[in-house]
Length: 430
Ligand SMILES: [Cu+2]
Image (cartoon, rainbow, N blue to C red; front, side):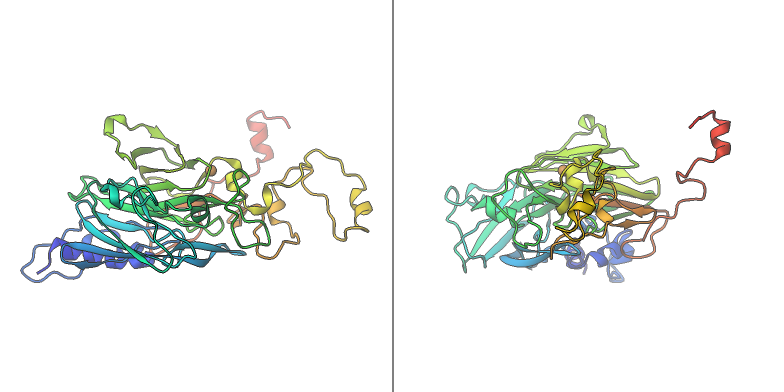
């Protein structure tokens, strides 16, 4: 007999693959195994969350508990093509896999420490017994290297939360140790999302040419990431026209708050890691500030197709490594500077005197293992942003599992050079 519990188990087992997830959305009939002849039609308990560029932590069921295993360990991680770092994370990735459970679930989460120093896990925003709170020295002994500790508690409230170490926080989080927690409500929602995304924001200092993030940095971060990827390494979010989309955004960067802006839509902020916001308290926004140490859930219905930018509105947070400490040459008249410098510095070229918009795509000599100041190619040329930038790709019909490619705008609906006839007709003199 198929119970709701086994259905949820099946649903969660599929989470190991984001690709499978994209295929799995929609009606229960598309994903659930065929029911036994006498069973009522199955009803999915929740829409599984998708962590772009990430994964969901698998679990086993033992008795009434869900059993998870986190392994804290060093790993190599690609921020974007061209930049791979020596990070620390969980289960071979940063951020660690998303922990996805249902309100009321009792869990046992085993944490194995394969780091060279002690660690703990704090369940940020989850209301747990004091001894499960994961603060080294205060609520537990730190987990020594090589040992495995057991956390056991019940998720009492639905919502979006996070996990991270509370030992040597500055180093361990600067190296990538963080993850999202999604707790679905026990009672299926009246208006469940068709797409449910989890994004973890972070920031790093990685000196070009090196691979170890500098945990001592306080102000001068040069890599800004969504799920530990910087554009053009970020996977887009996808949706079909008419979908209700929930985007859960967490921020565990060291110092920076991020105003996350979505183009093409107004959305509502529906929850924080403190709980849901009552309908009467929600208001429309196009930018939501996600301060350090918080989560924000936003919701919208995707009714306009296109490739819509989703990005931090701090301009330095949509830059990659090489863009933060270049000399300001805007407005400088270099004269014959290049010819005079080149005998001393072959290949020298003054850049940026007319603005810096094209510097990301200039063929510059780059240090090994580094990414340029800006993004990558788009359907109309170079996309002039990196870092905390991705896209919400909305289509009338999605046929594939992942990125549907670039949006093909209807003829006549793209900004183009004004014709002489246009200028004359509207009285514009140039
Ligand atoms: Cu930002």
